[in-house]
Length: 261
Picture 1 (cartoon, one colour):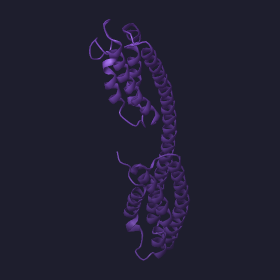
Picture 2 (cartoon, rainbow, N blue to C red; picture 1 turned 45 degrees about the horizontal axis):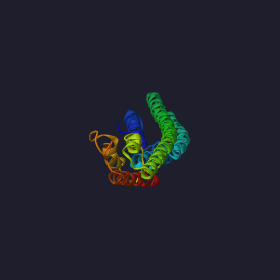
Picture 3 (tube, rainbow, N blue to C red; picture 1 turned 45 degrees about the vertical axis):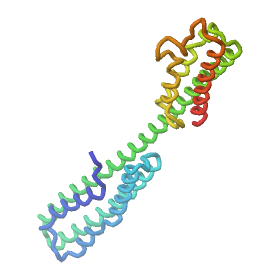
Picture 4 (cartoon, rainbow, N blue to C red; picture 1 turned 60 degrees about the vertical axis):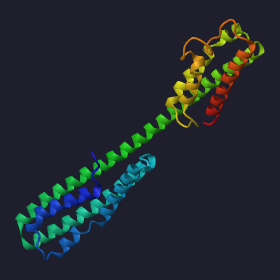
């Protein structure tokens, strides 16, 4: 449900008050009219609170600063409300007393109580909204810290996988035989693919991790059980060197992906 602006709620409360006291307030009672219209400070405070909500809704955030601004607006509203109700009650009492109109005095007293209740509810809601903004800010900070921890864990994990891949590439290049190759694959590729799958939940990467995960798929055994996942015993050193060269190229892309964070 959309938040009803504070100023709009005050306008509705004042309208109800005016309707309840209309026949008990002489049209020529200037002091009463002046007191009734003396809500400029209250309206200003409520507008400030509404501005905080608009800023939060526009994406500027509902964090600690918004909470502080709303608390300040609430304090200004309380101060203005006290002065406004005191002046209005005084003007109404003096007017009714000057005319000896007990019925008017009773009706205005009831209306004043209702108006005070409306304003008390409004102030309570401003306080609740400020508390909600504080809670949102605290949760956002907690989420950011959790996200940062997750990203650091992922970076450590994928850097470890890349280090193992680099060592494997060096080992195969030094001894490009089927036994050496099959000793390392598909485990090396699956190690990297697992970390790239986990990267989908992270922000700030230079490219889509799925792009590199798809490139690793043949080595990870997602395209069958033949080369480049495993090689037969008759594979030549040249063929194995070509496969490991392609794998190393994919790994370089992953290195850039991690380095671009």
